[in-house]
Length: 302
Length: 239
Image (cartoon, rainbow over all chains, first blue to last red):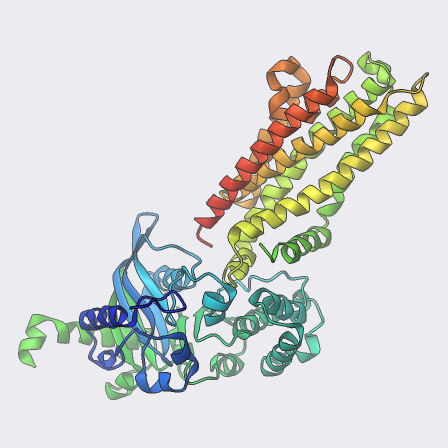
């Protein structure tokens, strides 16, 4: 079998890999989504990706400790295309670390990841960088740069032609309301402008997967919700949050990591079903009931 | 590496806006200006050798400062997330290290060259006969190698520690090594401190040009090795 042009594993092998991982995934709610992780480039660009619902993010046995604390412990995770997932963790560093590992900013102790059909080894501007957008708790941009310069630099680094950069910058300036301040240094607009600019620069390449680590904390709640409701039904969003109540309406699914393992994976509808609020307390209550259901006694009762 | 010019321009602009560019260029120039007010007789040397000696002392302060600034800058890049912003856009981390090295190198070349011109003009004013400029020019050029070594040391330490610790450690380490140039017999430290050792003892050097070529070459090789280490350290760092 000839290798895929993008350097991915041959399709059949990847299908088997996806099936193995799907079998290991416990939650009933997501099993349907883990159809395959075999996703050639052309498929990601087509509308069929929504019908096939391949896994946009796959973590296989991720393990990582920091300062003697195991933050990720043999984590197997598969997130379908188009999912909007809030990741809550105890300790809170786990969720942030998971996103940074997915973004390639930190390394796992062991395990492997695959995002939007590519592995981290495809380090080209056309590969990994265009598929992933990451916004961390720090904006990570020079405060003396203007939003326009930041977007232009992001476009240059992504390898876009000047006309394309201009077109994308204009569209993002409009969506993220950067217009008036487009040519002013970011520091004049304060941290909110810096966060908005960081989000806009992350969206410049129209990435398939967006990783948000406590983003836009300085913004007004309504404005934050508007900005974080990222357009695109094929776009997968993972949002690490310490305050999940503020993510209501932005995400459709929640993942609770406890001591590096998945303690709960539920949709926002599950909260309504159980009459729980979408908050940290509600997540903990649902996690307790989830754990009880999965225990041998709970299984026997069912 | 095709994005290296853009990254270097960005690094230079950051140095300009954060006012770091002024001491990097200014301190070597200041060292050259000091020579014009300190008589060479104070060091018991002739016009050119005395001026070179005082310039070497000035650079003993200026070059570790440049190294410390390189260390603090790279550590700050890691801390405030700008390096992460680049890395997420498929910019190789090693390219960022290289860009900072080139930015500092460019400024040091300008600063040391201007400092050297100032020193030479001061020496000319005092010299009775027209002196041979060759050994002096080569020795000053050789100190660029020393400066680049200091910057590379700073980048290695900056890739491992936080800004303050990195700056202090680099200043102590580089300052200590260069201060040894002024105290120890030349044969012991010439290779480590590069052209600066030759500049300091220009009068006593029989073959200054070959000494500078050997010592500056050694400095550059060490700087290249340290850059590889800095790039590897940044590559494995959590951002």
